[in-house]
Image (cartoon, rainbow, N blue to C red; front, side, top):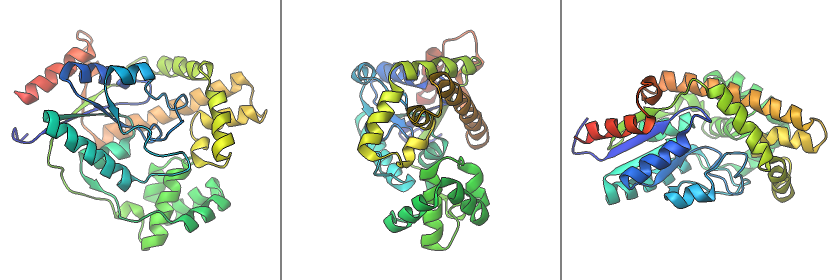
Length: 302
């Protein structure tokens, strides 16, 4: 690493792995802000279902890149990266170090590895057509036109599916062929969390989300943005919608959300294994993750 370049610390890992608490601890120890990289936490009012840092946690250290848009105002990767680059630059100016915390692999790769998404602005008319077609058919269209992108995007992820189709129709080229990379002007230290008890963590957290009012939050979001809002088909919100419609019992909703979250965590693990090379903090059972993280940061800083 070039010691003259500012440092970007990336704390990554699957959902429910403990990133929020550890990120706050690292930020407190080094006087940093937490720059959140979560593709759903960047939306306002989606607090419970996304396990967004609580008011108490946000009071403990400054958090950035949360609540950037309303749920009916999708943000694409290029727009998010621009926001993240500004936040990173501000932290580098203030401290010479910036801290990213999150589990959204594509967003993390775009920022830490300099992946450049295509500069295609939102296409409202196309999005209306995609919504009318419905997500299952849209994902089938994507699989036929850009199978590489379709493999990376979950079948129920309407936001990313529509964006990939939007780029395809606007440029005539698949999204997967347009994502070049320019190394960013930082040193990057990737730290990872992958606890062995992740399955239990996910089960416990899912039950807590429902206990904290996920169904009620979903009801409020539907009242404000309509049940057709694509973000309300994502994990947790989709099952809460089905419970509100009487299609799932509370127990069935929790069970299905847990199963979908476990499947998502498996995909995240695969992504991080293939696309990143972090120092896994869980690998040493004799040292606490915070101690391991601070030691690694100290070694890089010299």
